[in-house]
Image (tube, rainbow, N blue to C red; front, side, top):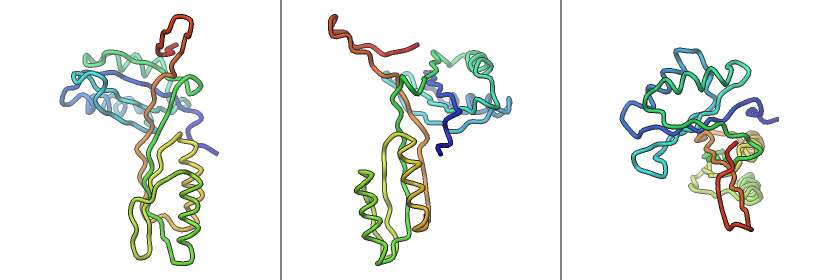
Length: 176
């Protein structure tokens, strides 16, 4: 079962300045908010960054989170992204034990999930998979019996799905 079904995804557009991420993370820490994942990178304009924060809804009321975030002067915009109306992706890198008799099965599993083998050693392989977090959860579960040596996931990134109004030729973000 997926571990992220009871989480909210917040997309926070902030000024791209030193210390902004530290202030956002500090706000969450001071309030005792549980961050499930956090990803940050420059946004569509180089003066802005987008922080995607996945928060635990059972321990933190969403309204309180948004209210506290808006108190930070660097915050430009906050959007809650409903999983049903957004596109979510995550990246997984895993180094897995791959004894000679298991290697073929691991390669086959990687092919089934459309992942890539990015490094091969004498007794291990490193695989990379990009996709929806549920897909990564399933892949990770199937790799575990082989022995995961190291695992890293980026945390979720997300954007609103696009509406396509063919009559008007418009393409716009579906933000609710």
